[in-house]
Length: 198
Image 1 (tube, one colour):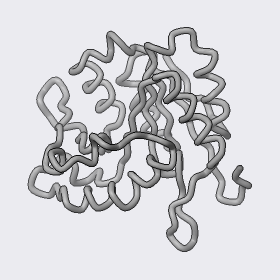
Image 2 (tube, helix red, strand yellow):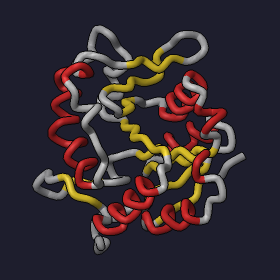
Image 3 (tube, rainbow, N blue to C red):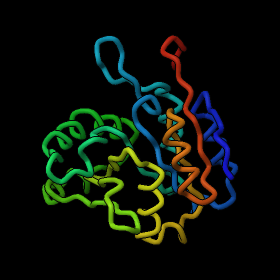
Image 4 (tube, rainbow, N blue to C red):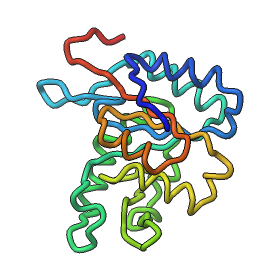
C-alpha cells in the first residue's frame, strides 16, 4: 500500500519526475488551493513557489508528461444536477484558475472555446453514482480518489498511464487516492504562510 510522503517544495516533485524511468506512462493530478496557490490577507491568489512551480511545469510540458487539476471547489454542488451552477463554476475558472494555469505556460485554447462552455463530463463510479465533474479541463470533486480511479478506467489511462502521482495538501484526499487508485504515489504539499516563497 502507498504511503503519504510530505514535500516542502515542488523541486522534490521535479526531481521525482526527472528520475522516473517511464515518463510517458506518468500522469500527475494536482490540487490547486494550498498546493499550487494560496490567498493572502487581501484575497489575492498567489503562487506558493512561483519559480519552482514554473520550472516544474516547464519540465512537464517539455517532456509531454500528462497532468490534470482536481479541486474540491464546488464540492457540494458539482455532482448535484439541481444545484450545479455552471455559470458560477465558469466564473471561478475564468477569474481564478485559468490565470494561474496561463502563468505556468499551459495552452488553454481548447478549454476556453465557446463550444465547451455548456459541456461537462460527469465521472461516475461502477454503480453509476457521480463522484466528480470535469468541466473545461478541471475536475471538481470531494471524492478525488474515486474521480481519478474511474476517469482513468473509463478512458484507458489506467493502461496507458498507470503511474499516477497525486499532490494535495489534505490527508483526506490523499487517503482517498490510496484507497482507490492502484500503486498511486501520494504527495502531501506542506505549506506555511510564514515561509518565504521563492
